[in-house]
Image (cartoon, rainbow, N blue to C red; front, side, top):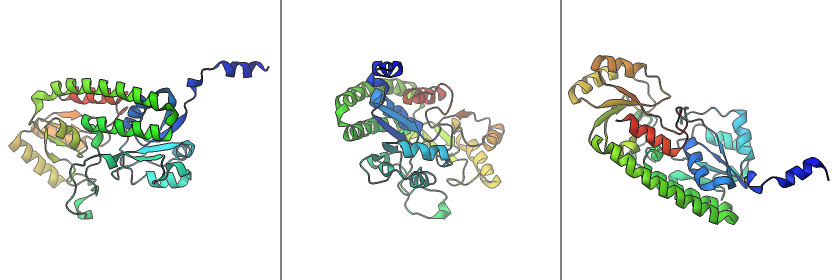
Length: 292
């Protein structure tokens, strides 16, 4: 028998994942890896440091979608500007909306900030509501169960493994949620400002009050007039900090800070958005530590 063939026979079966799952964002990959274990290979399309609204559909991403056995997306139209053309160009029936191997997480979430009207004059609003729902740990609990059921549905032979991994994940997450709640307990009622309102669910979870955004409207760059109004508002209401994402320029926030002495706290929105944030647990570790 050929030597190479003998070596291949000796390799553990677990080295080869049964299912390749493409996911739109790293936080989805983190949850999926926790539940899928060795049975699932996650293929991440967007980087954690990127603006989640805008991803360039590069040829390498098309190849990733084409190779996938299934796909999990955030939904809520967060990927609307980049994922549909990517899926179309990949031509993989397993990643098309409506397929049993296509999972839209937004269908299982109660949205915050549902708009009363849909008008482009209000900026780049999302019809279903704010789509950054993974930044509330309670929603992560929901999403983990949805992903567990999805994996079982497309790979029934590994049901026991997925259920065991999900049970372990849930136990750890609930323990961490108690830790995060304790760290944030004295922050209840604090007023904050953001650049873009991507922390709506984090603020809701920990009872922070967002009084304004540096963007005058979603997706609209700050004007001088709006910036002056913000400076006046800060002097009047004395918020705790400017909570700033990692992907927008901090130039306007730094100007506001120089005029008001309000600190800027960088608040990453996703796994791998900053060094040391390697999974969903360290994401919330970072966010809750940053507020101390």
